[in-house]
Length: 321
Image (cartoon, rainbow, N blue to C red; front, side, top):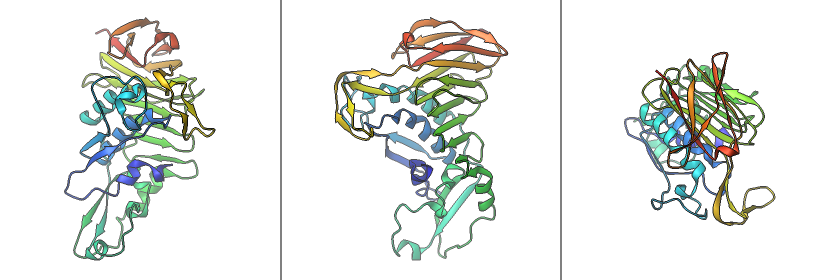
């Protein structure tokens, strides 16, 4: 739920005039949905205008043969696969900082008084998912919230439909269905429980059969997706060790399993809305082209299929000049 999410939690930690670096964060093994984490954190860190994210941890320079450590990202091909897209979005500033900034002021009375650890900033756990938030230390406490505080919450939070939207309109979290979207000129993504439904953004439409996936389309230049000559499509589902076994609720492992690590293929259909006909290549884990895909064009959309035979979790799209 949004109230217990990492962005909502960290949203109360920024101090006015100071940089904010998250020195350790992760969505840990054996959480089977952790592939969404890099894009999710990159998106909200950009909205909040935080300065750095350090995902903990990386141990070594080679792929692991079996997943055992709770934190070791380089054993998780489905997570590592999305790091380039998440990094591009963050460093290029594809996702805009929030339009509004809300401050909670703290005086000596607050600092030296009772500790209320992990209390949401301004008592609103949804606010860091909508606008920028920070704390400011002052001599005398300010009791009043900004005049437009309630207005911004009302405009961007629908608790009945369970949807929260950033005030930039680039990030939408449908926490009722468990679907998160990023919709910017150079990075567009759909994450979550998107099985057997058609979901999309301005240029990307996804229809897959997997129960859960993270799918992101990135421009590989400074140009928008609508005109870039090269695009990267990154798709990630679940991964498991061979013979890995969960308990009945899939919250704990009964058997860690053995090598090799098994990667769930993403199956379904991708459509790109823009001019031109792309050449689409399935890529191996090293970025080498391994298979050219058939592409159909209709109604201003280029469409191709994702299937297990592609043996790929990344695809390159090239458009002719």
